[in-house]
Image (cartoon, rainbow, N blue to C red; front, side, top):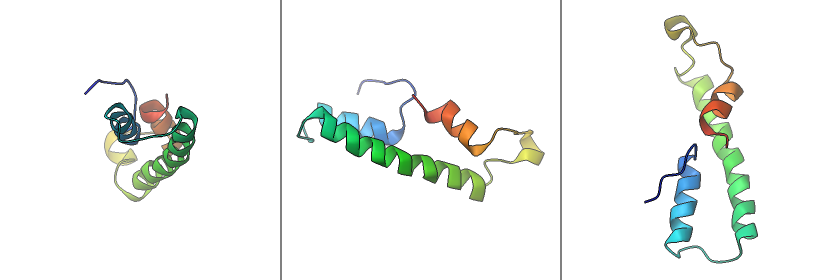
Length: 76
């Protein structure tokens, strides 16, 4: 599998499916669906960070917002 910098697991899955011929259609249709689901993924990450212990401000001195965390780790 090829490596892609700063790609989410969702993006890597879509790329792998496309490269193996499991996805059909033009790239625009696939890109549109991917963009929709990347927003869902972003919300899941930010919710997990809010509801989980990822923020741990007291323990780790974390001061980034959920959006900053997502942008630093998942945005292209």
